[in-house]
Image (cartoon, rainbow, N blue to C red):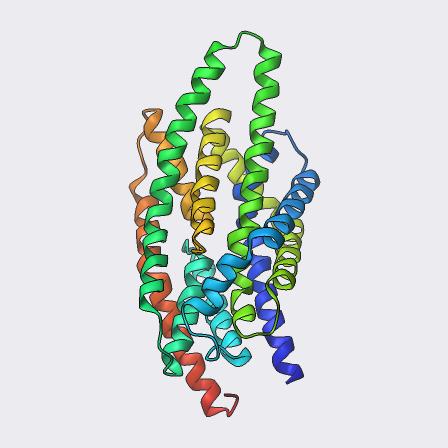
Length: 320
């Protein structure tokens, strides 16, 4: 049993650490790339707001991932390990292959996979709502991003003081990044720790703090290169468009969290960037949209398949 507990905690930590090492760049990449915040200031800000988000609001998505897809009682600690391991394996394979995938969708697929493996009555209605949220969140992010972009472009154009404009740019970058980090806590951390909550191993608030710490450590130890890369890519759009994309994405994730639905912040921010790109009259890279669409379908299905294979291997080894 001790080995099982260690495995469950280790896999959940690994997934949350991965989210922090990669997705945290979506929150603070612009602020770091523009020199508004140092890397350490950015990661500290991320840590603070992720913990707040996970502790205060993470329970809704944890409940959906841990108990809403597969009924309570079916998702044991062993099943939680298999679901998380299936997600981790697929994300690692995709990373090696250079594929852009959503950890959120992989975890949901892993949970569905173990549900099918044990013959649990999978709640397909809930799964359908989650899948709909995956499609709608980038669209909603794009719409809000366009509105914010036009509004703040008008505000900036009406200002005459360069110092005021510069101060506003800095405030927008920090505000947008902090809001995104808060949403990592409410949604992304909940995805990683949801199976542990569903298995009855952790209470939601404890799981939230655990996941938030793991995500923060990922941001601190391994996000440096990604954060600067994202910062340089996004700041090409300009401070206002970068903020609009960030904030539009964060609003979309907040709406999903209100309904307790796990979504991908990365796909949401893609929707926000596409929205401001269209608003600014820029062309949209079709390959980016294609990757998101493929992710909606391929990632959960692949994770389901991997979960079924791992369950079979565990059964043969007498571990379940």
